[in-house]
Amino acid sequence: MRNNIITTALAVATAVYADCPDYLSYALVPHGPFSGGTYNLSYMRPDPACRTFNSTIVESAVTNISNLITDPDLKRLFVNSYPNTLDTAIKWKGTANGSDEELTFVITGDINAMWLRDSANQMQSYLPLLTASDAYNSLASLYRGVINLQARYLLIDPYCNSFQPPIESGVSPSPNPSASDDTVRPNYTNTSIFECKYELDSLAAFLEVSSNYYNATQDATFFKKYQWVDAVETILQVATNMTVPTYTADGNVSVLSYSFTRLTNRASETTENGGLGNPFNNGTGLIRSFFRPSDDATIFQGFIPANMMFSRYLASASLIAAAIGENDLAQRMSCMASGLRDAITASGIVTTRSGGQIYAYEVDGYMGHNIMDDANIPSLLAAPFFGYLDVNDTVYQNTRQLILSAQNPYFMRGPDISAIGGAHDGPGYAWPMAAIVRILTSNDDAEITQQLQEIVSTTDGLGLIHESINTYNISDWTRQWFSWANGLFGQMVLDLEDRKPELLKQSFQGNSSTA
Ligand SMILES: *[C@@H]1O[C@H](CO)[C@@H](O)[C@H](O)[C@H]1NC(C)=O
Ligand SMILES: *[C@@H]1O[C@H](CO)[C@@H](O)[C@H](O)[C@H]1NC(C)=O
Ligand SMILES: *[C@@H]1O[C@H](CO)[C@@H](O)[C@H](O)[C@H]1NC(C)=O
Ligand SMILES: *[C@@H]1O[C@H](CO)[C@@H](O)[C@H](O)[C@H]1NC(C)=O
Ligand SMILES: *[C@@H]1O[C@H](CO)[C@@H](O)[C@H](O)[C@H]1NC(C)=O
Ligand SMILES: *[C@@H]1O[C@H](CO)[C@@H](O)[C@H](O)[C@H]1NC(C)=O
Ligand SMILES: *[C@@H]1O[C@H](CO)[C@@H](O)[C@H](O)[C@H]1NC(C)=O
Ligand SMILES: *[C@@H]1O[C@H](CO)[C@@H](O)[C@H](O)[C@H]1NC(C)=O
Ligand SMILES: *[C@@H]1O[C@H](CO)[C@@H](O)[C@H](O)[C@H]1NC(C)=O
Ligand SMILES: *[C@@H]1O[C@H](CO)[C@@H](O)[C@H](O)[C@H]1NC(C)=O
Ligand SMILES: *[C@@H]1O[C@H](CO)[C@@H](O)[C@H](O)[C@H]1NC(C)=O
Ligand SMILES: *[C@@H]1O[C@H](CO)[C@@H](O)[C@H](O)[C@H]1NC(C)=O
Image (cartoon, helix red, strand yellow):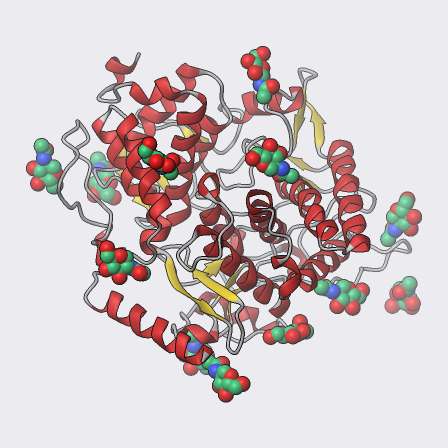
């Protein structure tokens, strides 16, 4: 019976995709009708028959919100970007073999694999519209499918960041030649795992998508049904193991349950000291992270933004454990969450030469600290967005001022767009994602308007949110199909509609007209 359902879903999927253009090439060239604005933005939604998931509520939000936007280019960018994950990235949705357990395979966009971080955040774009539902076509069902599949992935190997399609989907796995060194992982097969970079924020992402679903639906029963508790237990084991310092008390080198090296010509694609990373001191209370949310290696493993995000969502996910009667687990989760918060305050704050206190991006627990911010979320800039602290927190505001200036080694400036970037695409490339987070964490109308103007005017006519843009040449950008950043842009527009609807009535037809 279940197999029949799976077969039917597969048949539909095949029919849907057969005559559809590959979005990777579709998103490279403009398509009419054009916006009619100064920036002549393309229409980028796929033909309805080619969309990967239909949601009435998302369509209704796209219509309602776009009717509130006056500027033709901002309107077009919103219409293209907000539904992008549903339009293009729900590669398969079905159930586990022989079970009613929903599964949703969400690709990141241009790479045919599912990242824990991206898929959690791709779902988060639609959080404002999420309500409890059992229906197959509901956002709630999509969320449940992502949570179940992420739990399965974490149980295969919690130190991996990106995974292949579930076997039930019949979707072919994608080759990842650069992960050939990941085969040292005990459970590695190239048909189940795409890449094994251990990133603390990937674990936080599972807690994030779980908390978001629970908070919006109050559906606790779901979390009892499948492997959620086992996945959380595994996450706690990783977190505990990753507090182990480089040296034992008597000076031996600690045995660590993870290490990573790769043959590469990029420093950020491998780690120091034969795969252990730079030495990490005892006593910080922080959880180590070998990689950042950009999938680039950390310089110091006490990576503050991921520790913040992990603490925040561990605390909220402990409410789920409590609601399903897992009281001991709930207790351990909330205890670790608050211990981590203390550790961040004790080890993650640095006093600058002028005497102000700021959060470091990374620390090693010796005296090493890295003062910067990177565009990817979790970042320091995004700390209030993911709910770790209040936007008016003094240390946050000090940090924000510094990372949005030339004092941040990765703040990219230029005539077309100025925003935080990162080592992933290198100097000179600003990330619209960081401009979006800047808006989400600002109460200043002038700052918000300026950032919106820069985002709307730098899509190179394509009308989608790219990963990064050369600050001196908007035709030089990376990733035509980066689904998460598109959803995040839409989520930001919904947030503005809620907080500052008058800003959506402005013109963005040129710098002078927005003053
Ligand atoms: C808009 O862009 C399209 C595609 O590049 C082009 O054919 C069209 O002439 C442009 N329209 C305007 C008004 O610039
Ligand atoms: C979405 O709806 C269109 C009709 O508007 C249909 O052709 C398409 O198959 C649907 N997609 C899915 C995944 O159900
Ligand atoms: C869009 O507006 C209609 C009419 O006011 C309303 O019924 C619907 O709930 C709105 N949709 C969303 C997602 O808010
Ligand atoms: C390997 O993956 C399976 C699930 O496919 C899991 O049951 C098992 O515990 C994993 N083994 C290790 C060593 O992680
Ligand atoms: C589904 O389960 C059946 C029976 O356990 C097995 O024979 C079949 O190979 C499974 N199919 C997939 C796609 O895992
Ligand atoms: C997995 O590895 C095998 C053996 O090296 C290779 O033939 C196959 O193409 C690989 N599959 C993928 C998806 O990379
Ligand atoms: C944690 O470390 C212990 C040994 O200290 C090991 O047995 C266990 O497998 C590790 N678990 C994970 C998830 O790394
Ligand atoms: C770490 O520091 C704590 C507290 O000072 C101490 O009890 C513990 O033995 C130390 N562990 C290592 C591995 O140095
Ligand atoms: C430290 O290393 C030495 C030399 O390998 C070994 O004799 C000793 O047992 C180790 N100590 C611990 C606590 O592992
Ligand atoms: C749940 O969502 C509400 C807003 O809908 C928010 O105020 C509250 O803080 C959230 N709770 C948690 C634990 O995230
Ligand atoms: C932050 O401070 C500003 C200015 O004092 C105030 O308008 C705003 O409401 C505060 N925001 C929060 C979330 O407390
Ligand atoms: C801008 O970037 C595009 C795309 O990389 C390139 O073709 C063009 O030559 C660049 N323009 C300048 C002035 O460098």
